[in-house]
Image (cartoon, rainbow, N blue to C red):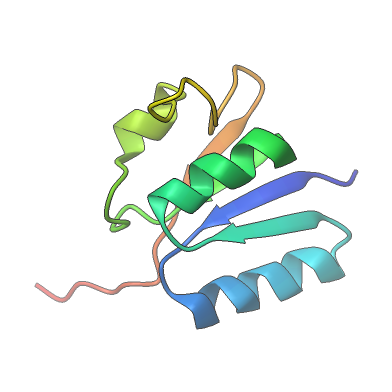
Length: 94
């Protein structure tokens, strides 16, 4: 089943790799490399799935979880039917 997937990731090379894999699996993918772009893309693309980098500046996981809107009330990143996955390519060593 083809899903519309929005990858909100600040690392362009990582986002491109993820998109390539997901497109190879038959999904439609859009990439947003900052919070403002994520809102714009989500408004027109209406994703089924949002992949969110938790280290993204300008937007928090909580804001996406609550389907935050931009200043004009547009650009809902997430609806009740949208799945949210929080992913990062960072490794923390303690």
